[in-house]
Image (cartoon, rainbow, N blue to C red; front, side, top):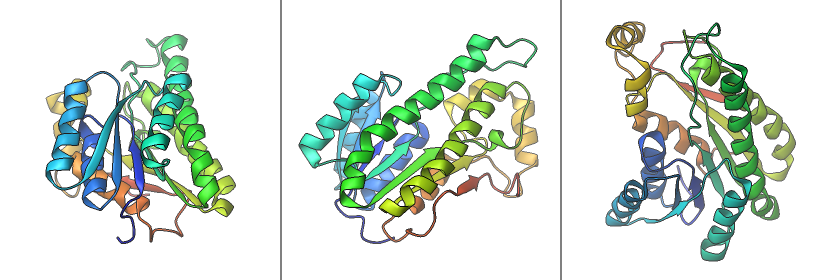
Length: 251
């Protein structure tokens, strides 16, 4: 991938996991990276330190992406320091209930759906003016394979991310004429602290057995797909979803 040197990338939820891996990779490819985080200042600072130690440029900015005021404060800081966001990677994970439909409440299901879309709406609205002004932008949302292939007890996440994926398609149609692409990366199960919370040993073994490549995804696998979409020369792909699942599902 070429031509991304100097572009500014905002990665939400970038203090760990997929977000941290993506921040490091985009920085390695020449972008200046905004490491957004919610609470873990030390982890975000470590990601910035790692990027700078490798010769890249990064800054950590705290903001709850569900809070429109906080999001605007964050993007204004980026605008002042670096001149605006060219690439948005919206990865921040909104908490959700892991329950079957028979046990879940509307507050849990509807609350997840509302928070998921509110966050995506807020961060996208905040970065679009700069992208429109320059006639170039890359927006990448992190979805999930659960949007298309349900798994027990994951209804809140799957439904909310399905809405996000369709949101991306509508934006792709509207923003394409302005030089802005919008795509989704949909991982299967990813080795992470969160996966440990929702995959018991038996479920993990079943997931691996169902994957032709013989393992779960690593955060770096997902970051590679994000970086592809974020690149300067990936200019004729929009409204698409990249499945990063090792062949577990083939649509």
